[in-house]
Structures are given as C-alpha cells and as structure tokens.
Amino acid sequence: MAQSPPPPLEGRVLSTLNEDGTRHKIRPRLVKGRFLRWRQILGYTLIAIFAVLPFIEINGRPFFLLNIPERKFFVFGGAFLATDTVVLMLFMVAIVIGIFLLTALWGRVWCGWACPQTIYMELIYRPIERLFEGTPTHQRRMDREGGGIRRMLKNATFFLVSFFFANIFVAYFIGGKTVVAAMTGSPSDHLTAFVTVLLVTVLMFIDFAWFREQTCIVACPYGRLQAVLLDRNSVIVGYDYNRGEPRARYRDRKRAEKAGEQTDFGDCVDCDLCVKCCPTGIDIRQGLQMECIGCTQCIDACDSVMDGFKKPRGLIRYTSSSELGGAKKKLLRARTVAYPALLFGLVSLLVFAIGQKADADIILLRGRGEPYKLIENKVSNHIRLKVVNRGSADEEYKITLAENPSKTKLIIPTNPLPVKEGKPAIATVFAMTPRKAFKDGQCIIKVKVSATKSKFVKVVAFKLLGPKAAQ
Ligand code: SF4
Ligand code: SF4
Image 1 (spheres, protein in one colour):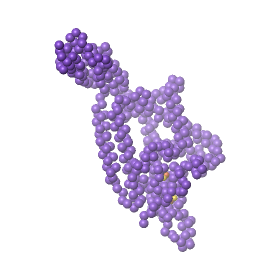
Image 2 (cartoon, protein in one colour):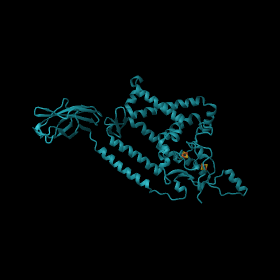
Image 3 (tube, protein in one colour):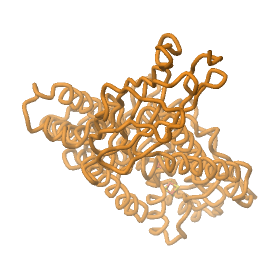
Image 4 (spheres, helix red, strand yellow):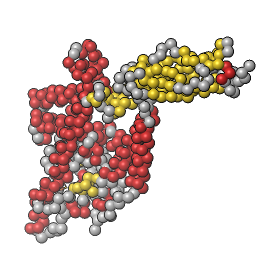
C-alpha cells in the first residue's frame, strides 16, 4: 500500500534556524558519487567558460559585453543597442518562458547543476573551507572554540578568490581589456572600475563566507516560485517512502530480529547521511521542500549506504511526486505543451527581428518649429536625419537623393556624416523643393544613405510638407 511522507518535524520553521531564532550553521559532509562527478565536470566547465567569455574578441569586437553606461551590448558576437527594445523584450520573455518550461520538466535542475551560487559554493569555496578547516566536525569545533589562524587564512583565500571572480564579473560590463588595464595600472586612473571590483569582491565574500544557503532559501526569487512552477509530474529529487518506510537503524533491526518482533522494515536504515550532506540542511525524507535545490548530494549519499547494505540504489533518486504516490508519470501536460509552443513562437520572432537588423539604423524626423518655409518659389523642409552606427568601426555616411523627379536639392552642412562605432549622430538636412512639385500639400522624396567604408546603403522615403495650392 502506498504510504505518505512523514510529517514535518514539530516546531521547525527553517533548517537554518535554531529554536531560539539564532542561525543554525550548515556544515555539510562531502559524499562522493556518480552525480558529484558529473556536477564537477559540468560545474568546472561552466566556470572556465565564464572566466574566458569577456576576454574573447572576434574581428576586433567583444564576443560578450553588456556595457550599460555606454548602452552597447554584444551578445555572442552580435551588436545590440539600447534602442533594440523589441529584440530585448523578446529575449527577456523567451528566457522567462524557457525557465518555466525547464522547471515544469526537470524541477530545480538549474539550481543544482548550473546556478553560480551552487557551483561556486560547492566547487570552489567549500573545498577551500575543507582544506583549511577539515571535516564538518572540525568546523563545528572551530565555531564553538574559535578558528584561529586557519580560519583567518581561509577567509583571506576566500577574499582573494572573490577578488579574482569579481574582476571577471565586472569585465562583462566594462570589457576584459579595461579590467586588465585597471588592474595592472594605477587605481586612480580607473577609479570607477577599481571601486566596482572591490564592491563586488566584498559582496561575493559576504555571500560565500557568511550568507551561503540563505541566498537560495530566503533571497532567490526563483526559489520562492517553485510552488507554482512545479507540478506533480515535474522531476524532483525524492525519497521513495514506500520503499524506505518504516525506517529503522541497523542495530534496532537486529534487536527486533532476535526478539522475534516486527521485521518488515523498509530499506531506510535511518543513518541520516542524506541529512548530514545536504547543503541546505533539510531532511529529504520529509517530502518535497522549498529549500531543496536539487543538488543530488543526498542521492549519492543514500546510494553509497544502499551499496553497503547490498540493496538496490535509488531509495533517493530523480523521480516525481506522482511516481512516488504510485501513479504513472505524465510527460504531456497543459504546461509542457503550452510553454514549448510559446517558446517556439518567441524564438522565431527573435530570430526574425535579429535578421532584420542592418549595420546602421536610419531614422528621418521632421525638424522642430514650423513645418515648412516658403523661400521665393521654393519650399524649404527642415529634416533631422539620425544615423545609428551598429557596425564594428567608425563610419561616414553620405546623404543623397535616390530618385529626384521633384527636383529637390538637399543642403547638408556635414556630409558625409561621421558616426562613431555603436553611437548615434544627427545630420541637419534642408530639402529645397520647387513649389509646383507639391500635390495636396505633400511631396515624397527618397533619401539615400550610403556608408563610405562598408557596403551599407539604405533608401528611406520621406514626406515633405508644402502649401496645399500651387498659387
Ligand atoms: S535534499 Fe538532497 S537534493 Fe535537496 S538540497 Fe538537500 S542534498 Fe540537495
Ligand atoms: S541516506 Fe538513505 S538510508 Fe540513510 S537515512 Fe537517508 S534515506 Fe535513509
């Protein structure tokens, strides 16, 4: 008969809180296993990618740069400007829907396998801590009696590691070259970069040395949304309570056997290894909990115990709430059909919008003030021609007329118009058109903008305004 998961422990609010409200420090035990191996391979690969990405350049332009002060963005080699609102909006919505889909299918796989908080904590900072402070037992002793020189050395190493990663993090926003120049030159020459790196270093140090699992439990908004993003068929790390209960320790089983008492125990030997290794301090046997980040440490721990008792692995495993309750897992659900359909539509639109992007944006705006001026038998229209150079180098743009049946003359003080890479510039244009070319107060001209160094050419139609009747 299918059993229910055991009720939560009485009086417990958070795994990280003692009953008197003080912080309960989590000192997880490291358990090696197949999932840890795969997480290490993936995690260190992701860290390496993170470390080199802001320093890669292709054809002299950054491969990845989010330069907010200068409003220049390079994503996988493609240049985007702050004016690319449609692309930006589609990109953000696609990410949100992608996260919804990922969570509906595989639960907190992001948190356990790819989130920087988990990866850096478990694969960088925690190993350093073990190196200086030893096992969790030693660490707890240091908590009680003081850590002395070892803890000081650990914290100094934490700070240096945080400083290193803070440099890389800031490089994503100001560019790899600028960070290298700031760190090798005098701080006073790059004061903003230097102060930002120091600030990020301190924040990282506080997070990984002190705040730790609290980030996942109380601060991360994604963690708080799990209750609505998961359903009973989503993949979770779960304890098979039908197989594991009633749990009993090895010695209690032996005693019961000897005394001829109940011996139909479940497979859980109540060793608590799954609790001791959990980085958020929870007992997975209490059922699915918001604090579980899906790190799989408890799977490796329980598998090692099952191996020792020559029982099949998987008492704790990747499963789903419906499977644990004895039902069949359903892959096709409303959300696993709707999210991919929506995502497909969004990504198609995004690819289309990016495909429409040329090397420059040309925008023609009417000049401020009166719509036109009559100068003898000519009509003068003031136009502001805005060019946004999206290319990878400074450029000059020649402004002419593509076709000219109206015999319009353009007067442009600066032509060609120089525009810096990734920047906008505005040319003042006066269109002088014979009065007789106007019909119903309008005359359409075609303005041609051609780059002098590249092959970019664009023709834009513009409506000139003039008198309604050609008197
Ligand atoms: S319960 Fe298991 S999977 Fe969840 S956080 Fe703890 S160790 Fe990781
Ligand atoms: S590690 Fe496995 S056997 Fe040990 S307490 Fe956890 S579930 Fe039970």
